[in-house]
Amino acid sequence: MTRSLILRTLFLSVAILAASSALPAAGQAQQADGRIGAGGQIKAGQKAKNVILFLADAGGVPVINAASLLGYGEPLRLNVQKWPHLGLSETSPVDAFVSDSANGMSAIVTGVKTHNGVISQGPDGVRGKKDGTPAKTVLEYAEEHGLLTGVITTQSIADATPAATYSHSNDRGKWGEIFPQAFSPRFGDGVDVMFGAGRQKIGEQMATAGTSFDQLSRTHGRPIYGALADVPASAKRPIVVSDTMDVRAATFKALDILQKGPKGYLLVVEWDAHTDDPREGLQNVVDFDKLIAEVEKRVDLNDTLLVFTADHSFGLQVDGGRRGEDVLAGYDAWKTAPKDKEGGIVRLKNVMVNDTHTGEEVPALAIGAGAERVRGYFPNTHLFDVMMQAWGWKADAASAK
Ligand SMILES: [Zn+2]
Image (cartoon, rainbow, N blue to C red; front, top):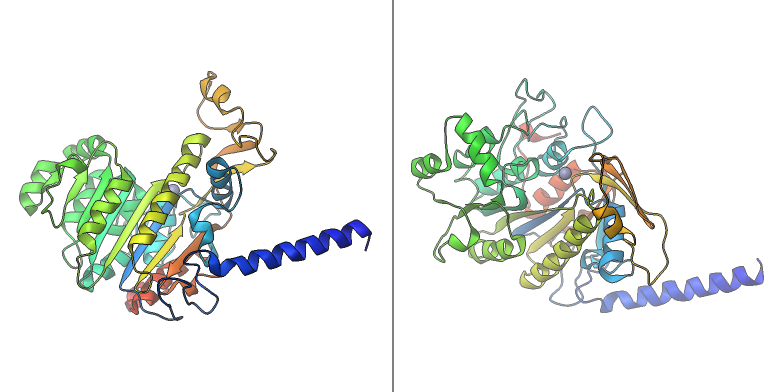
């Protein structure tokens, strides 16, 4: 060992010691035995009453890393990066290496991998051609068990990620048949709280399919509001389909309702994290992370499981830059420059974006009741088991893998 190597090793050991001794002080950091430092003690195997699944769409490891650098100028500053339980979740569909949101989210919420483009149906489904066996979703299980359920997204409420929780379709593009399925649930009384965007396009597609927001509302006796602000304070099962959705306001409004459920609740919150526009995408992750920190303070982690993950990864990498420098240096020039085509490679000084989904595993982070099952490398279908086991539920034989 050279002198400098010895020094460096010494320094590293001290740094690691310092870091590990700092762990218990990190607020509610859950310790290796599953107990929580502050706010009660969670034993391994503690049952969850409530589950909240936070889905950063396209929020892979490199995006999480870059978001911390954008938001705080340093790595490891996001709230979710302080959570005690981490695994790497593999996202591929049954027949390819790289996932889309349809297969990615379907696998997480049903425990069954399928083909890209297919919404919560088994691999016997063929996109756009043939229905596969419906795969029962955690939301359907929650409804069956009498829990309250909610789905919130920055995107269209009929887009692949939210759709995978409450519908089954052989093609993610069929918004006109996907959205109405929320009103004809297979279990319980269906999704209780739905807040999302996509009003215009869902309306157009429903018109083609021979229905409308008004008709659905009248048939099922449930108003479909056009804005979050229109929801009356007394509403117990509100649906909002707007043009854009304020997910932070939506999440708190949903919790006001869901936390009143005596048997518990499932809440799924999606925030888009595609970084084809790197500043927009990374800022979304920073904002989502702040919301998650607020939610974490509001729930009791002794009876609530929080999971953060992505449906698939994305081709963004930090490959240069110095501390103190803007990680997105050169962004403004890129943003204002004329572009001949959408997509392709974006080359900023410190960041390269290959505008496509990628195949590497995504982070799955967890805290709270049942969080200890999130560890190691696993297929994304394991996250379905994590949620079911947190509640102490068994999947039906038909959904078993
Ligand atoms: Zn996606």
